[in-house]
Image (tube, rainbow, N blue to C red; front, top):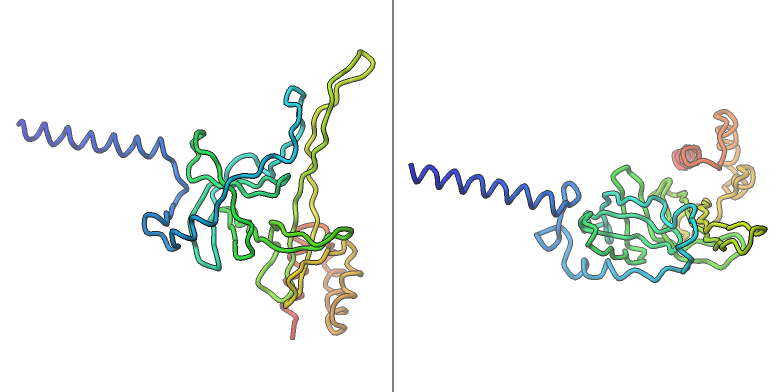
Length: 253
């Protein structure tokens, strides 16, 4: 009887310990830790993350703030690849003001996030299928910059991407009954880019499809023009851009 009681006690103790660990240290589903024998290597893990940058804007937090520097403030499960090799699963979110991908191994509030390195060999895939790459792109009126881009389609001859940024406008307190308080504000905006292999720098994607078609080879222009007109597509929405580029790549000789 004593042996039976001891066995039951040990069983319940182990069950409680396991459940407690699962509650207090949540990790992404199918979490693959490199240190526990993951597919990557420890030196790579040590180099794919670094400390976060300081905020670009120090603003008066006493004022009301509209918007957010994040595309989505909540952390989502994402998988990090380096040179095509799976490294690890993380909780991730995108600070589009600083253009940083923040990573955590748990969702515990006491864990401080790290930043994903800005490296062209990096790929991040969220659970919902969104893919992020680090690419060089040339805005219309500025010099080429490096940053994180969202793939609309990738790994083809013609590829399209979306860049999402945030702008911060500082508010001010009411100085008198005649001057109203102006809140701090984060505004989000996006732009589209494309490339054709072997080009490495992404170019702005014209919103007018006729301008885009003129950049293509003559034998593709009429086909794509007819396809766009028939399906009433434009170059202003993600799904329609994907449809246009899929058709374009499928009709290459």
